[in-house]
Image (cartoon, rainbow, N blue to C red; front, side, top):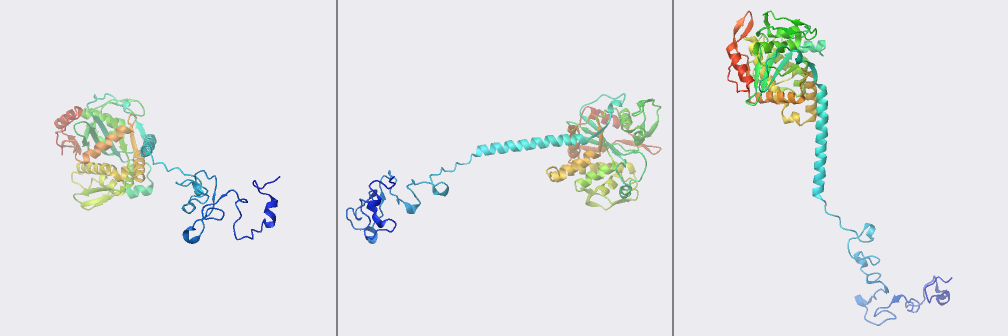
Length: 424
């Protein structure tokens, strides 16, 4: 089989194959019929060689309009490829990169962000909800006054030492008394006409009414017995405290919130301390307080000493309630700052410390707790009013409430009116 191109043969190649031609002239067109001779080239029409006498290179026939074999070689057009962007390695055309679809990108970015926020919010809600200790059953409170407008929270600071080691008790100056009592009691009214925070001095003179024991279920008849308000809590816990406050004021308590010593100190430390201005310095060996006047940041230990001190003041319980209001408002303001809320490394430890420390009623939701928190922040910002329960005098060391003022105050709260009553 003859593999040479048409008109080629071993005979007419002779013995030149592999050794080149001995002639100074290129092979004739008869031998290389596929080569087209341009003018001026050997075997073609003669013309003056361009470029200083250098003959042009031959071009191949049948190039189908792509120019010659060497057409545009020095511009990167190899093997007759058309002009235009080259593909990988320079072979073939490459489509231009499409312009980015910004609307599509923004759409999917927004969908992703919304999904992340939704999933995080739902997870955070269930995590926080699981931490609440709903241990107080207000359904056991009997003979309750009718509910009014707005929402009333009873906020209690107890001297519970649960979770404190011997070293912690010494450090925090809590002592080691058995059981627990109330160190502070406040009613926070949340309504449409301004929020009101009212401190109830623990030495307030109150009558213990008929009640049903929270554990025994037994009914204890009222005998007209008068005690200090914190004694009601010591006698039968939160439900008797609520029953006693409702009986002596006529105000319906909607929710109950309690925090102990350890929880209070942990919350303050979790937010990095609370800044407060102390008008006049004081010391108290019982609480461990030792404060100078001026603006300062209190840590958990110092904050607990500040809100518990009463022996350093002439009007011990009244001044202490004012300090408690002042500090709790400052704490709420500190927790609500962007540096806490927007920083997960501060927000979650603060929430965890707070929720782990709280005891609430069975009907308390996170929404209710949030409403209480923002109301306290509002009071600290001047959007509400803080006051003590009006006092008219004392009886055997117990502080006697001003009955006329208390009646007016309760009516204003029940009707969700702006509070006009002044206090001590």
